[in-house]
Image 1: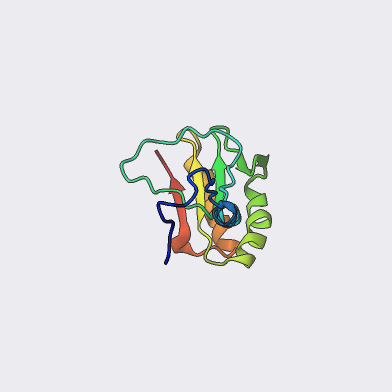
Image 2: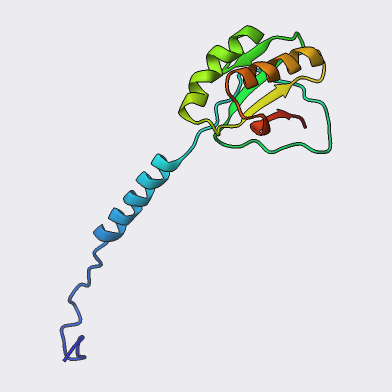
Length: 135
């Protein structure tokens, strides 16, 4: 017969084996750590213009920032308009479908933002995958 009968010794301790549950927790923890995607920020704060149709940032994208002083930043480093191709062309070689997001300050000159857009196209970015981020 299965189970315990009432006549068994009542002082016998019952142990629950948690090792398999702990193994599952660690496997899930490792899975979530490995599958996490980190967003690389531009490194400067940009005061973006307030528009109604702001696009959401994708987790795996190239972020370029144009400051109010018309300086272009990537990864916290000032690269200038001429440095856009050199920085993003290797990234686009790895993943040609990677979106390019340009964060333009509301006090930045439109021409500089447009030049960054043109340089991204020359680097090989898909025209439909380039967007300008606003509030």
